[in-house]
Image 1: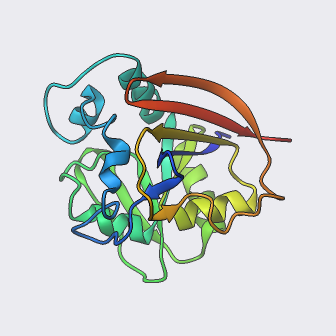
Image 2 (image 1 turned 135 degrees about the vertical axis):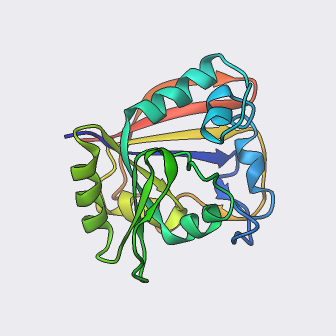
Length: 205
C-alpha cells in the first residue's frame, strides 16, 4: 500500500492561500504569489497544455511528485475554485476523490482525470483513493480543511511544504485547527532554489 502524503505551497508567514478565495479568484487575494516558483517550470507547462518552460531541480521534483501519485483526495472548495480554470485535459491525470456534502455524478476529463464526488467523509475518500491508486501513493491535495482533517486523523505519513519567500499577512493558515499535541513530525530532506525552499517532514512513530 502506498504512502498518504500532503504536498502544499506556503508563504513564509504560514498561509497556503490568501483571503477571499472563490471561483474566479483561486487561492484568494495574492495567493498565486506562493506558487510563482512553479509556474515557469516545464512540467507545469505540460500539465496545463502549454509548451516550453524551465528544467532543473525544481522541475525534476514536481515531475517526481506527479509520478508517485496514483490518486488524489481534494476538498470541494478547492475543486470549485479549480473547475473553472483547469484545462480540458486536467493536470492530475489520475483519479481525484472530492469530499463534498452535495452528490454529483463523476466528471470525466481527457487525459485520465476523473473527479468522483464522495459524501461519506475523509475515511471513505481515502479508502477509495487507495483502491484506485493501485499501490502508488495518495496525495491529499487540499484545501486547508481537508489537509487539517487528515493531519488531525493521523493518516498523513509525509508532509512536504514548499515555502515561498513571500508574506501574505492574512489568508488561510495551514495549521489552523490542528492540535500541536497530536501532530508530531520528524525532519526529512530539505532542498532549495532561489524561488522556494522545499521541506519534507515525516510522521513520528
